[in-house]
Length: 321
Image (tube, rainbow, N blue to C red; front, side, top):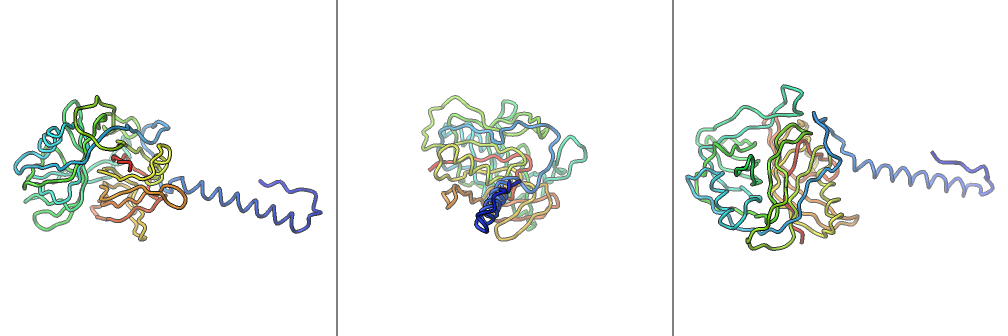
């Protein structure tokens, strides 16, 4: 609360200064509040104060060819291994899958989770991915992936969700864009905050794979604004510009720059394109996404900065430029 001087000899000038200072404080308070997510979902467990798990590492973009008839997980594993990598991210646009199995986000029936997933769907005729992303790493000592996408099924129905690694096969040979990581690996581990086993980056022994540039493997944790936390991370690590590769996770509904709104809180999201660039007031994250919510509704667009908190997790790779 402002202290008012008893000396009023300055007349209106003194009062003007008091009002000006109070207005400035209010503006600063409003700016500080912009960093606090407007939506929050309580998780069943307690998380650590750090909201980003990260590893700086080497990496390299490469072309990943997936042969028809191979299980998707094995096709991805062998393609990464051929380049000398054990982990990384993939852009899935155009990939045709059959057989194909997936789940969607769903409400949790117990207090053990803030949200859950649906029954398994296995559409006849498989599906062709329109927009999607994958994180590849390991779970329980074996290759594993986490992938979200939107697609068109064999009967023409558009849908989206979380692709199941063990029940999905490549239907047509395709070459996709991928980024391999050297010195980091995404590993699925129990997460005490969400009560799920989630991918997070861990340091790994360097390989002999050729690498280019400066990369960061990230996992963003719940209830922080997605764009804002990436902007702060970039500033902290001296990143002037970065390209986002991959991008698999969830947000608490969504707010888009064009005014579009997703109200349902449980989503599964894939980044379709993203960059972090210098703006007038510092770094600015420009992130385009595609998502499905727990009702099955699909949405896509550019995330509004300051208004899209993470629900469970978000994995992505930053390539500093």
